[in-house]
Length: 429
Ligand code: GDP
Ligand code: IMO
Ligand code: MG
Image (tube, rainbow, N blue to C red; front, side):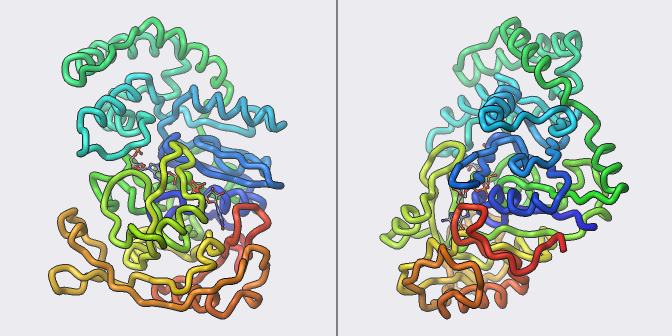
């Protein structure tokens, strides 16, 4: 029996949703363990696209889906997502969708603070998704958060909201020059959310533990990417949670001995939404080609994604930080048509070679990528279903990545559809 963690290795949007949906076929349970609706995970089945922001991407495979304690959940967005799924004939009951009683609730003031802070920062902004993620995690850390167990207890909820709003309104009005919020309106609105979601709220750690004991397989679905991790990413241009595989345990309530493998999702090139350092970013026609061919627009905010060459400095960082046992290469099809491809193997900073991803933003900003150039291919590879059938140059590109990051490629994705995939080694086998 295997329990597998899926994480992003770059700056998010690597194609985690597609691979989680694919591998969910072999899992009994799919668990999200961190983040919130800053995530946008795209799944395409039979030509139909579904973007999940909170519900784990295993939902289309009709597997038990769990929202772990490590998330910050906007109940309004979750309900919207459940309503959308209903129109697709998917209506998970309390056993099919479970929400940790310890997951934190995103409140209207979290969103207001997020947006107003970004506005106040002007060109020093982070470029957040504006979904209230940072302020919600901030309240969790300062022990002012509201969890689902409190949301569904109307008396406790009312007390908490009334108390905290005094402080939030003062801050919104006097520091951020933003609109204040009415506690009565929030209490009324959230009482409906509580009623709707209460049947799903439970102790998910116990459910996962019992399932593993009974021989079931669990797939842990990461959000964002390793370089958006609050500890290990390009701080402060990061999200507010730990995105690395170790947090699958914390964020779901399981012990590390249950994890049998960690798959890192690697886009065949690099993208980033929002601001922050990006050493291999392209500002030329090649960057535009990748952005257009890869349809690189954020699945949550619709913003254009910045595009650049594959960077093995960050990939090696991801291999180590996550303990990757294998990787999946996605969007290889997008690179078809480029005469040559660059792979960044190290950086140069003030005349010195830098092999390990630096922590300092000033150093990062001064790092120039050192590239190795490989020949490209012109063929459309999206219809190919066997590695042997790839053009030689595509095979060499994959081989070189494996060599540079010393980690095997288990899966290659050549299109957004579930079937547009080549599984070399199934992590569940
Ligand atoms: P996630 O956040 O990691 O789940 O990734 P997103 O869903 O935000 O972004 C990935 C985008 O690439 C989505 O639009 C997917 O449908 C698409 N995609 C995934 N794999 C492939 C692939 O192999 N080829 C192409 N062309 N598109 C892909
Ligand atoms: P998925 O799971 C890409 C980025 C934002 C911003 C920074 C902080 O789809 O890969 P936040 O709202 O989290 O406080 O924003 O993190 N970001 C993502 N970028 N993919 C994501 O999720 C992201 N979630 C957050 O753009 O730069
Ligand atoms: Mg995404």
